[in-house]
Amino acid sequence: MTRRHGTGSLYQRRDGRWIGRLPDGRGGHVHFTGTDPDDVERRMDAARRERDRTTSSGVRGAERLRDLADRYMTTVAPIVNAPRTVEDHAQVLRDHILPVIGSVHVPQLTARDAQRVVTRMQARGYAPKTIRNAVRVLSAVLRHAEREQSIPSNVARLVVVPAVPRERLPMLTTEQVMAFLDATRDDELWPVWVLCATTAMRISEVLGLLWRDVSWDEQGRPAKVAITGQYRLAGTRADGSAIYHRQTTKTPGSMATMYLPPRAVEAMLRAHRDRRSLFLVFARRGGDLPYNRSWVNEQFRHALARHGLPPVRLHSLRHAAVVALLDANGGDIRDAMHLARHASVKTTIDVYGQDADAARKRAAEALGRAHERRAKNGG
Image 1 (cartoon, rainbow, N blue to C red):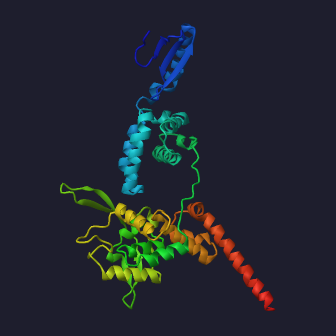
Image 2: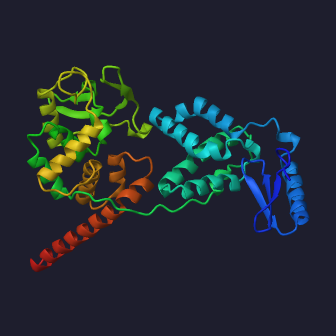
């Protein structure tokens, strides 16, 4: 017994039970089951009336989520996000959000609708962090509708998301980093390693440095560098050569001036001596192309293996720089936040809180030893 579109369908299974299937008006379906077809039909009728009441003609002209998302990604997202972030968010919408609830009218979105996105991603085996990111993207789109007063509240804030397990990735100790820099002094990428390990710059920021970003002191030595942008591989030409686009930094707060400690000064002097480009500080041989990050990561792994060090991510050099600062200042998390250029101290605490506690413990032990020496000397 098949109904016309929108009114649902009722059929009998082989085991004798009757199944009702009714579109819920939000891109999904509601199912009813029972042994009496009339009872199932009555329940479907009640649900159909409730659905039609909540999807009345007053919202038929309302914007659907897919149209809101398209408008947001075209007009607002490029203003508040970096180009790469815009691309990532567009992919999240395309792959995870719009296939589930894209046809729902925005004023009628519920927390249950948003939760369906999470349920679908969990069923497909996506990691909790990926699911949380998808909900953040949906929340950003609905936050724009909230600003426009198209909806009274952002239902994405009510979604229950899986917890992200706190996994502490392996890192090099300060002593291991120093040993690594000593052992790789003759490597082509040694200045890159040094800048990451002594300034806490991200590898994308180091590879994006331009000579015009370098400030020199009165003795003709590099004193500081300005972080103004980074390069992203955008594709390849017909002849196989790479196409790079320069874009802004990860966040506006990442645009900063970094002062160079002595070892970084030495690294920049060597880069200047071996310069291959009038524009790029770190360029490939024979041209003005930046290094490919994948190749740089691969070289880092090979260098670690050659010198018997544990396999870690290149990002661990940035981490080691912040930890070295925490060791030096007794665990002051505020200094770490400024060096890492985090937008919030909460981010710094989440990432480096354990290292800050360890540094404070070492500082307390050192202070205790100082008091003991003073007591022995009769001070």
